[in-house]
Length: 104
Image (cartoon, rainbow, N blue to C red):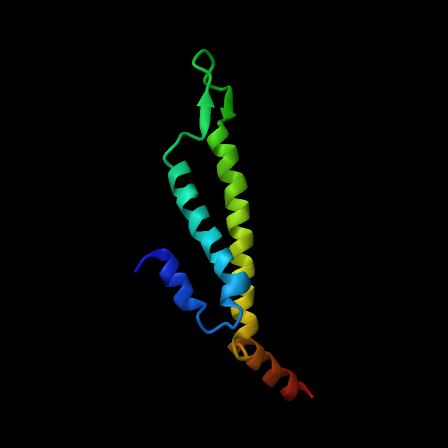
């Protein structure tokens, strides 16, 4: 199963899969591929005359920008999953509520 199909399966229960989610999944898959390719390139250019002088390469700058876009897309998609998930009390919250009730 390729990455796009994997993501579509995860989001198949959400009603708006075709409107907003599907294009964002396409973006996530594209960004993952681009980031994978950029990782193959050097991120730092070292001055041969003075190794202490280093500069980021254009690949490093592009990687940083694409990673930020990728993280934003993933954050939105995970937010959609959480919004559609049934409300479930975390064990920590349950414990805190029990402690609060004991104190009273």
